[in-house]
Length: 143
Image 1 (cartoon, rainbow, N blue to C red):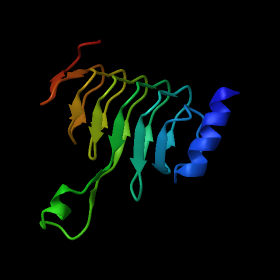
Image 2: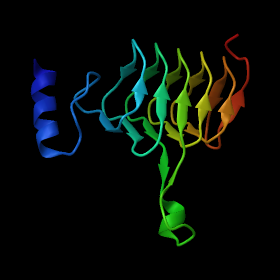
Image 3: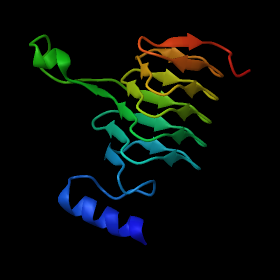
Image 4: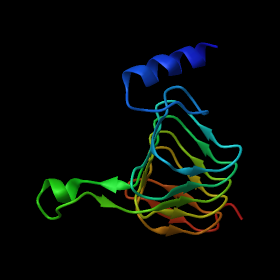
């Protein structure tokens, strides 16, 4: 009941729509989110004008940003528009608190993204552990 009240207030005073995950999760655009996905509070998924896919059985911790848009090149005059790239997160992926998943990332199945990791726009193989900034990919860590 409390979550529904918080979400009603939150959606009334912001542009964010209600979601089934947590009342304080921001979802922009229309990401494709699989079954049995957990998205904790204060996390953001920005899928405006781009494809963001999250597979089944994923666990996205609090304060995670999954953001397909990058405006820094527009800001400094190198591009005329915001750069947007698709994001694919496979099934059974854990993303630790305070991580950022940037546009162009393709995270394989059964991967763990450690807390505070900045995931660049690269392909990450199945069963990998990804940690740090800059990120380090430990391929096959969970095989």
